[in-house]
Amino acid sequence: MAGLITLALSYVLSQFYRSFLAVMTPTLADELGMTNAQFSLASGIWFVAFAAMQFIVGMSLDRFGPRRTASILLAFGGGGGALLFAVAWRPEIIVLAMALIGIGCSPLLMASLFIFARTYSPLRFAALASWFIAFGNAGNVLGAAPLAASVDAFGWRGSMFGLALASLVVAAGIFFLVRDPEQLEDGAGATGLAGYIELLKMPVLWAIIPLTAVNYAPAATIRGLWAGPYLADVFGANALAIGNVTFFMAIAMVVGSFAYGPLDTFFRTRKWVAFGGSLFSLAALMMLWLVPMPLFAMAVAALLVIGLFGMGYGVLMAHARAFFPAHLTGRGVTLMNFFSIGGAGVIQFITGPVFLAGSVPSDPTAGYSTLFGFYALLLAIGLAVYLFSRDARPAPPGEATARR
Image (cartoon, rainbow, N blue to C red; front, top):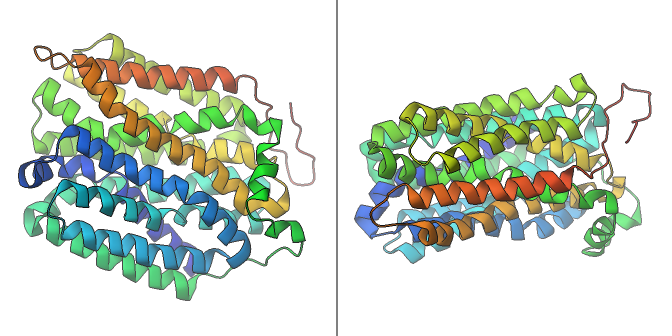
C-alpha cells in the first residue's frame, strides 16, 4: 500500500509537469521572450518524449519491474529536467528541460497500471485506473492557482528548484517502498519489440487506437497551454482569472476521472461509456469553434465540459486491456499510452501552426476558432472509427466477459 501511495504521489508530479506551463506563460514570455509557438513546442516535446519512451518503459516493466523502472527514470529525468528548467537562460533550454521531464514522467502511470493488471481482477481495472488518474489530476490543480502563488512568492526559478527536490524525494520513495509483482515465467514476455508487433497485429485494437490517440488531447493541451492565452487574448482575462479558470478545469478533470471509473461496470459496456463521454467533449469544442466570441461564462463552461468528459482514458485503457495476452501486459498498457500521450504531443506540435494559420491581426478570435475546430475534427474522426470497435463488457467474477 505504501508503494502505491508513493506511485500516486509521483503521478501527481507527472500531471503537474504536463500542465504547469499554462500558468507560467506570462512570466516566461516576459523574462525569456518565449512566444506562443515556442510554448507549443515546449509543451508538445514533453508529450512526444513521454510517448517515445513508452516502448522502453514497456519492455523494462516486463523485464525489470515497476520499482526500478519508475524510480530511476523519475530521478534522472524528472529531477534533472526540473533543475535544468530552473537555470534556463533561453527558450531552447526550456524545451530541452521539458523533454527530460517527459522522460522522467514516462513510467509513472504505467508502473501503477502494470501492478493493477498483474495483481487485481480485470473487473476492477477501469475503476482502479480511473481513480488513480483522478488522484493524480491533483497535479493539474497544483499547477493552477497554487503554482501562481508559488511563483509570486519564490519566483519561477525557486519554484522549479523545489519541484526538482520533490521529484528526487518521490523517486527515492518509489525505490524503497514499491514491491514488484511476480514476473510471469512465460518466455514470450521477453521478446523485446516483437511483443509490440504481436499486439499491433491484433485487428481488435485497430478501431480503439484512433480514439485513444485523440480523446485526451483536447483536455490536456487546452488546459496545459491554450486556455491561458485564449482567455487573455479573447476576453482580456488577467493572471488571477486565468488561474481560477484553469484551477476549476483541473477540478473538472479530477471529477471526470472519478466519474468514469465505475461506469463500465454500471452500464456493462466500455465502448459506449467512452463513446458517449467523448460526444460531450466534441459538442463543447464545436461550440467554441462555431461561436468565436461567446459570453465569458459560456466559454468557461465549455472548457469545464472538455475537462470533465475528456478523461475517458481509464475506460479506453480497460477496453484495450481486455484483449491483451497476459505475458504482454506491460507492453500492452504502454502501447496504448504511447498512442494517448503521443497523440497529445503530436497534436500539441500541430496546434501552433494551426493557430498561426487561422490568425487574423484584426480579429483575436480567429486563430482560436480555427484551433477549436481542429480539435473537433480530430475527435470526430476518432469517434467515427471507434464505432467499428468490438465492445468488452465487464462481467461479474466467475462469468466470461461477453464481447460484442
